[in-house]
Length: 407
Image (cartoon, rainbow, N blue to C red; front, side, top):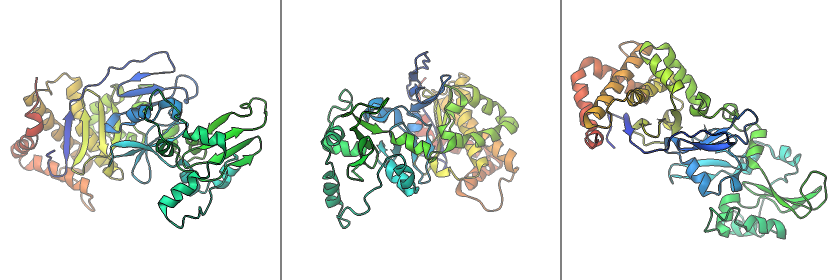
């Protein structure tokens, strides 16, 4: 992938499904599925999608879907470690860009790290065993902890395939991947025996309690809901929204930079487009020389996670570039042709320069500059000094992509 110096913004031409809203509690949406079951009343809920190339919807299904993980209970959010997460009732999904796959985060480890063990104890979840006797030997620790599966019913539940229809190659190793290793021995807690794992707690009911599962029933404690109840999810990500609304499509941390465009004359129509068109705006991990991406047919804009802590005006400027592509697409411009592809890139860089100039003047931003600030200054300065030369440079850089476009 070629780029202008550390700044590539490429139109992806990907096929995707049409929007399909329904009166059902969950239904198909572009690139994913919308679920209202964990959103309270009024049809509010949460979507799980593949937007930005973060394939949560694909992997939610691969990991067993609702049967294994419960319903989505948050929107995506970026953790303090820079990974993209999304909570379900039963788990916390973590996108691993190095492996291009989703794994389950160690929810109960996160609760321990947040000093919530006493909080969990009050909810009948035992504390973790501090020393398993392995003396730091990972392989020995693995075997020791699996030997703590001492309750026959809990062990059988842990090892059983939770969703045979979707998980056809189940094994004990897959159970460890899904639930994590035991963090405690089975412990009697009132009317049930409970065992804590890295990603779940499992209960076997032993007493008859009105309104509770019958004795002998084995149930999971919903780790994702515990994270939510403990206040460990960003508040904005936990707020349900209506399917297709701006709140459902635009990640919370990108709303403020987008709002900046509403006060910039050339960008106000782009801001309005983002609010009114079926267009997702998300963070996503990308190569270092890619600032943002626009997928025309799947209708998402993604901004590189590496800029998450950058000047909001720089993020707004990147958004203006990508929204310029969206404007051309929704305006039925021939962006699929070679000439149209080159033209949409030219227009996007000109829009970007106009927005940066509106924020910081014709000389660009001064003072202490980040890498993304310098990139924006470079684009603005190049267009001012030699617009024809810059246009030729764009055509050269985007030749591999636009040269392959077809009408």
